Image (cartoon, rainbow, N blue to C red; front, top):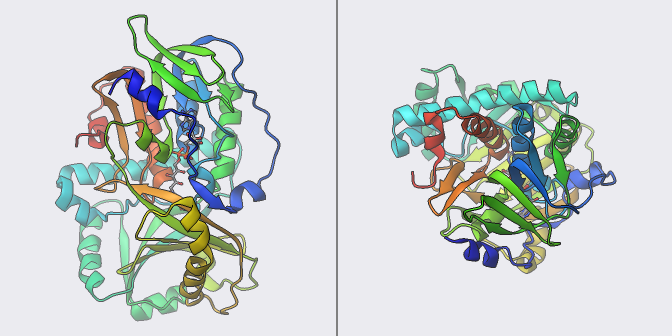
Length: 412
Ligand SMILES: Cc1cc2nc3c(=O)[nH]c(=O)nc-3n(C[C@H](O)[C@H](O)[C@H](O)COP(=O)(O)OP(=O)(O)OC[C@H]3O[C@@H](n4cnc5c(N)ncnc54)[C@H](O)[C@@H]3O)c2cc1C
């Protein structure tokens, strides 16, 4: 890929990642305080993309003393981050036992450990930024919806219980007694939380800005020049940034910038209910169904937040047509977990969702783009992955040799 290909892919054609009314931006409405870039400047690292990944990367880099600039083409947290359902989990979409079969036991174990540690990193960061961002402890439940999943759950429990990332395997009766939930069985793991991804992104940027980060909204990177004179980024209004390195934290939109597809793109439909009077024990957990399509739910305050992955990539037009039917399906599925089946959606949205072939995120450089690093928090545990990658990035740019980085490379 060369810089003219990049120029082509950064065309002004807008990508609608999210359709409908996601909860977070409405719940957290606040005026923007960030200007567009209006001067040429130089820095150590230019981070492109102001979602949760870019915010975490910019925060870690600034903390390590890098002179960092953050560019966002729209408003901060206006991409997939605002569509997230706020489950914070270290578990990838592929369970450890399955990931071992895909990439080998040693690497799979290490990927899980790094993600597990990333939750601790987020906990420490929240203290530093002095904002809880609706952080709350949860139990993470993976509920079996078909007999075929039971064997998988047994294998997973055996694999995980040889590590510090312990799980409990609950049978039908125990699941009902402990959580009031009916299902064939469930895998329960701790170290699971909820976090408001929208306010987390904004708080990270706010805090990093007090430590020297220069952050700009409405500043689209339109061209990358990797000439002999160093790395230069052109911004939409003609301003230029010279940097030693660039980080593309451009989310699912990165598929436009890469020479080949690395993500499997689908559409997720989500809703947030009106406040409910009684959530029962559901308020203590977040839950992912196994053995059917990919349905997940969490609670936020006294509301239920749930999503269902469609089996196709739907255009924005098709999403709008399907939205109410898909929300009706989710509603029925969620109601089975509630003590009173009185669920009424108040917010509904549909969004592009990307996962990788092995459920791991990507961190990598392209041979033709030296000094440019992509950070792609693909997968259902995208927030934990982004925190993990941001830590690896800061170590890498500080000159550390870290073999963990290779686990997430493009050509794995
Ligand atoms: C419906 C749904 C539910 C989800 N639920 C969860 C969940 O419960 N838990 C979880 O951990 N993860 C969840 N995820 C995944 C999580 O939301 C993503 O992993 C995460 O938001 C990705 O953040 P990001 O910063 O990489 O991408 P984004 O938030 O999309 O940010 C990328 C930013 O880059 C900007 N950009 C792109 N190109 C340019 C350019 N040329 N110049 C300047 N800026 C540019 C975009 O405008 C965008 O703001 C969910 C995802 C979806 C869609």
